[in-house]
Amino acid sequence: MSVRQESIDARAGVRRTLIGIAGFIALIMGLFVASLIAPGTMSREEYITLGYYPLAQTREIANFSLIDHNGQRFGPDRLQGHWSLLFFGYTYCPDVCPVTLVQINKAVQQLEPDIANSLRVALVSVDPERDTPETLGKYIRVFNDSFTGVTGEFDEVVKLATQLDIAFVKVPGDEPGTYLVNHSGSIVVISPEGRYHGVLKPPHQSEKMASVISALVES
Image 1: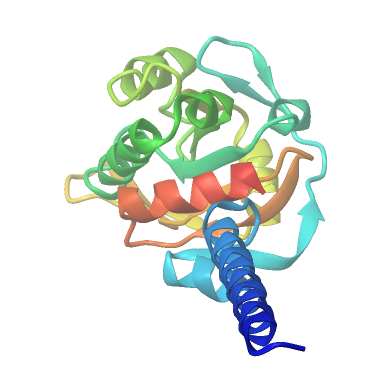
Image 2: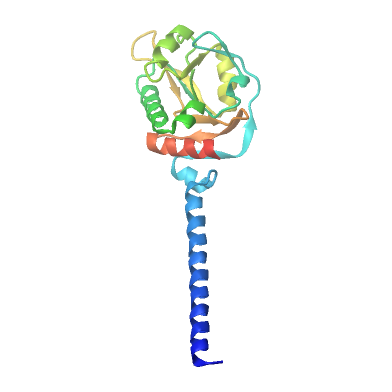
């Protein structure tokens, strides 16, 4: 073999090696980018850093019967086919409830339109004695017209809240004959299968909440 031929073969070998290295780098970069945008790749630890605590195993929700602010029945079937956020609060709440609902609304506004449209948000009243459907309707529309107010018989509210690890208790107010309701600040997340999936724990930040919702919906 001539020296010239050896030189040509050597250059060809180097070219093939460089092409192989370039292809390998492209593959690695592609996998890296895919890991950033692929749905369902957020780990439990990553969810927790954002304030979301998924259950180790999702739970079925037993039957309950409440009504929404339009007077329509609100039962387990209303939690199927989409992701849902349930927040247990009440219209007379002086602080936690309005602050939380504002954060949820801000989170929804940060979502992609198709994700926002697929999400359902409900305020479940822990004070059904005062929170009639009409009262809830006026209250919830202040935050977002798409949100749903839910009320009903006290025992039915307790039945649902207990299944979702939500505690609340009535306490005397500052004025005689008045009362407040101490309640959890957590937001319950329900999967499209209508199962208890996990909780968003306070303090709530709309940016973190939006990231969690997007990851869940796209998973």
